[in-house]
Length: 442
Image (cartoon, rainbow, N blue to C red; front, side, top):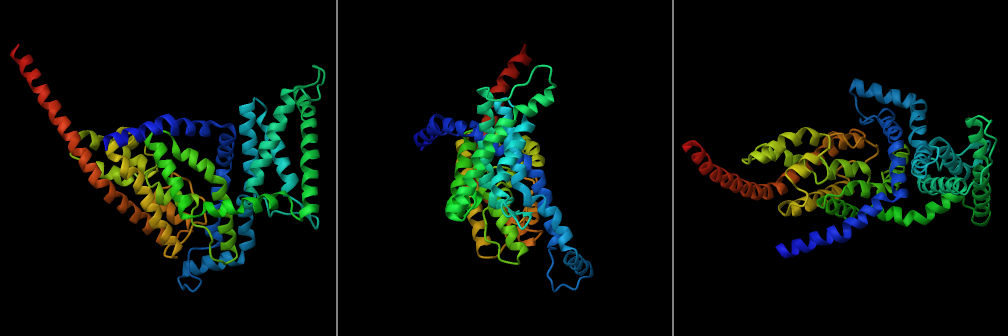
């Protein structure tokens, strides 16, 4: 068993870790991650507006407060929808600018200029004018993959032209701001002359503009991302990488974010239309059912550590409980430790995978409401689960059940580890006693 474990650890250290590190440090992966992080405040606030538009009460309720809220939201729905449409409905614009700014920093260029170039390149192909108005159809989740592609394209075109001095240069006497404006003329021209004809050609030959064509190509991949096997694979990769000390969640969420946002937009559109929500595996599901207290769902373990007989584990529990409430668990991961600790390998991998399966079927069978809102990942698990599902009660209950499940699975492994530490503490105490006796006799 020990040899098998050593082989596994060796494989992770020598093969998986270097590959994961290269993926995490790849500049486009970093840029996409930075783009979503930049857009996050707008999307969280926009999602929060849903609770005002769709109050968490039955239409048949006779409770005065709930009745007044429902009537208010019905009367002023158009006005209440506007902040949502200008945040979640324009998520791809924020993401485009964020990606452009990140790539600009990596390429040594001006972030504002690059961000605006990326914004223009996306709008050029994803915002057709119909009846004198710009269509917003592809400015939300439907256009995410197009936003990623056009932002990277625009940023790299600008970097290439700048690197090869293919720019308009003005005399040194011209103010810097004016010179910089002329410097961007050629990149703007190149982007327009490549993307716009491509979009027109595609529309004339297939009847689809670029975002529609890209969405049709990735549709099978988007559908596959919202499946039980895909979810379990994502959890497994995250847990294995973290066990080796690599920030697996950062890598997995960086890859999954485009799929999650596209599917979240679909859920929100279905909710607005009064239809059944189609998707299960979204960021709210990941954060509040699988990562309760942080990766590995270690908040229940932190509470168990508080009652440990081993002094070391009790001290780690005291340090880890409060951060764990907000899904920060580095004190537990590196203090207990869990990372590279063979005793905790099985529960650390299995707890989130078993909870993921239980939660999946609970949502799939309609026992628990699905995710419609984006919440801060630091929101305590049960509260975040309820918030993400428009303040329904059943997600809160499910999150608490996942915590109980995690506690039950961690407990026997914790007791085994505790016995080992107690033996070590006893041995150290026995070794210290003769030393103290000699010192006293002198």
